[in-house]
Length: 267
Image (cartoon, rainbow, N blue to C red; front, side):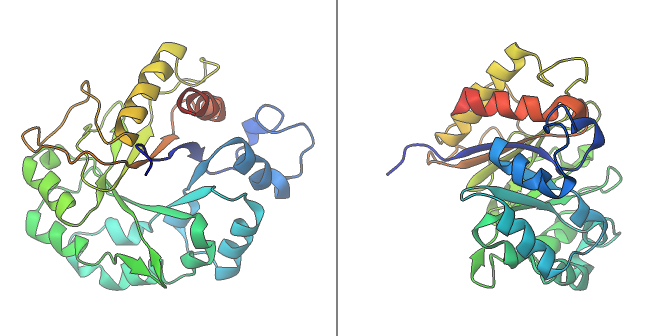
């Protein structure tokens, strides 16, 4: 039995004009960008699913273009999370989940449920939302990741709820939003959002070294000792966990370089 999970690093999407001729080879057709990106990186977070539905054929096409072991993370529709009463969003959640995601097969990874900064922690309503998230879909196991952006979530009760439903609290390293490093699921999801276009590797080399050690700690069943937690009293069960880390938002021009360098440090 392996003593550590798989670490995957990636970026948000694969279509971005400044990557043409920098990350992507000169004159590479756009229709081959996913094929190329999926062989340079190990995961991609898809943002387009947040704004609109896709056809089953689209998911099937994506799956056909990537190699074995490559994983897509999908950001859930904004209509599921940008609402006053989350627990009342069953129809929106079902619509998102049944659009054809399972056409990705074993390339389907975590589903990212991102909540707006205005969404406050209301325990009863939030648990009602978590109850809407199935463990399986068409026979495929689902992984759910929760990115919250309001300081009212900085309480042990939130970690306990996430843990109860095996949902991962996203560790989001961001300039403005709270950071929560509690491990609450059988996988870990990190979004690294403090990169810079002025740094060739998105994050400075010493920061990449630090992140490599954190990801390895998580994958080995432990946890970093230098990140903030909301429920430090709860002891973590030591078992291997898959880890996903994405370079998102700030420093997007060099995000692919950061992802490749971090993968090299953890591989």
